[in-house]
Every structure is written in structure tokens, then in C-alpha cells.
Image (cartoon, rainbow, N blue to C red; front, side, top):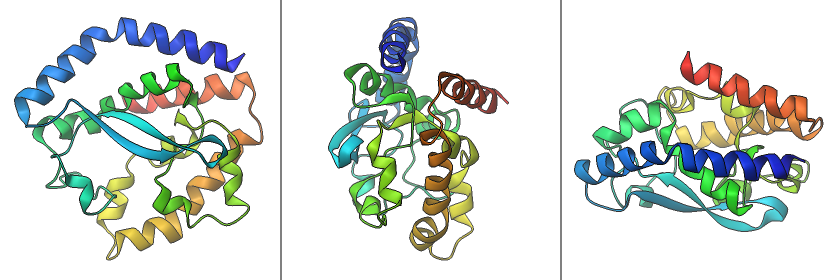
Length: 195
């Protein structure tokens, strides 16, 4: 049932939001050189890699350094990218991933392989389900880059403190994957972004 909802919702979303997609595409192209979309390999269901879509918010090649964005004014982030990231508009492109079946609207956020390699056997349970655009961890850590800005070693802080807590929050939905939880997470996400 959830897969059916994902297909219908992402299809309608892509159609209804096409003017927004067009606006973002023009803004990104006028603001900096490079493609409109940023594609990155992430780890999906059953530990399989897939390419996630995002509207590009950073300079081309920015991911060759740290994979973590630090603070509200990371110098790698473009002018348009600052606002695109602030209002989570970069994530809208993942409706393509949802429609294609790589992701769901709700599920644990897919990580890059580098961080998945740190998972212990219990934490690998998050790879048993389709990753999503949003979940409890996404809501709780919406300002994650600000938290990392305060750290002397952001990579270590992410691996040792934030990532385990995000996985714990992921398991709340994985252990109770009902339609009520599915819609609850969607509405909580919208509410937090709007607020």
C-alpha cells in the first residue's frame, strides 16, 4: 500500500511542483556554473548502491573534500544553495528517486558508503527497508550542520554521536511501519519546515 502511495504522491508531486523545479533550475544555473542536479551514490535497501538526486546547492567538486556540510555558511555552498538548503528545497528532487523505486517518502535517510561501513550488525537493520526522504531522525536533526559547526572534529562527532542517535530514531519507524506513522512523519516534517 505504501509503495502505491509513494508512486501516486511522487508522480503528482513531480507534476504539481514542475514550476518550482523550473524556477530552481534557472536560479541554480544563473547563480553558478555546473549542472542543476547533484547526484551522489548512497546506500539503499539490502545494502545496494543507488544514485540520489538533489538540486545542486554547492560548488561543483565540493564533495571531493568533506562529505559533511558544516554550519549555516559553509563556503562551498552557493548563494542560491544557502536558501535551497535552508528550506529543504534540494530534497524535492528525490521525488524522482521515490517514483523510480529507489526511495520512499518515509524511511531512514540513505547514507554514503563511507558511513555505512561504520555500522555494527544491529545498525545494519536500517538497510532492510527502502530509504526515505524523511523520518524521525530528519525531523530531529534538521539543523545538523549547525551542531557540527560547534565541533572540533565534525566527522568524529557525526560518526560517534549523531549517526548512532539517528539510527536509533530510524528504528522507531522501522519497528512500527504503519500507515499512521507514515503520514504522521510526513505531517511533522511539513510542520517543522513551515515553522
